Image 1 (cartoon, rainbow, N blue to C red):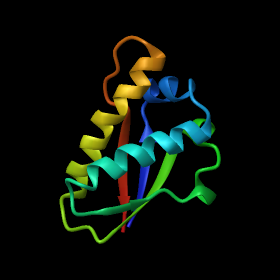
Image 2 (tube, helix red, strand yellow):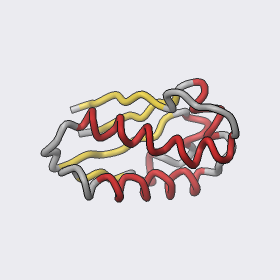
Image 3 (cartoon, helix red, strand yellow):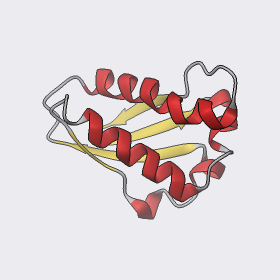
Amino acid sequence: MRVNIKFTAKGKAAIENFNNEELLEIFARYIKTLTKKYDIEVDIPLEVNQNIVNDGTLVAMAQNVNCDADTFFKELSRDIKIPLKKRLGGKLENVFKTEFIE
């Protein structure tokens, strides 16, 4: 399943403080941590995530989904706020919305 992670206006402002490699590494780290808790495999393909900041979207591929994917990505959104807030400063609401494409 393809998952489009679309950044909100505040999320876009926050990710502008990072380069593409940093964003990929942050997402990979938090996804790896959450997959210990949830029965899901998530991969972030590099070929479609070459310019996350300009696109305003990150594409993830989810396989072997044996949990509520929506809950997984909501928790990911909450966790991702931590490093984004540190660099942006201030408060962040929802950082991204997910769109599931079967």
